[in-house]
Length: 201
Image 1 (cartoon, rainbow, N blue to C red):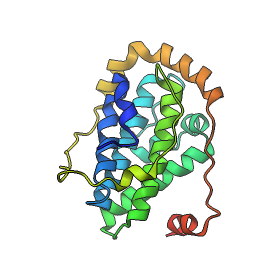
Image 2 (cartoon, helix red, strand yellow):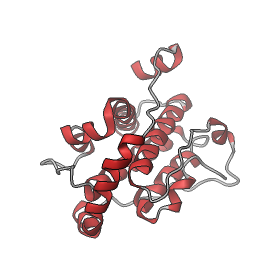
Image 3 (cartoon, rainbow, N blue to C red):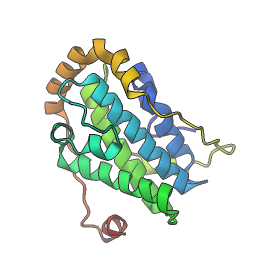
């Protein structure tokens, strides 16, 4: 089964979050709630990875996702549009985990699309080879051949990740500063009624 996130596997340095993103998409038809939870986890892993490789990002006093996303430096790097998409994943993910509120396939699809756009930005800024892509919703209709197991992914040890990526920091920060200028934003259009309703709900 092909997914929108398969391209991440071409970059070994993205291994901390690639599999979780792929797993999120594979499970959408079977379990939208698990899909959303995996979207949030993949995003959190990618955010922590960014902190470990980018010297412009200074660790806040807490390493929770909401703290990491809300530093001025992080918001400056990703920009307002991508930040709003990420905040949607975080909020819907929190609902799926903590409130037990029923989530819809529509919400899960929007989470995957928002995750794709964030990952595309990460790839543009930090990948060795980057090719701009677009999210293909048709791939979500592929029913997995067998039930996809939800893999229990251990939390990321941020200190270990920092140590592991220390040598890459200067190179990847410089690459991001250069490539960030070339990124083509994909504006969030919430004028459409259906999308706006999902965001408000």
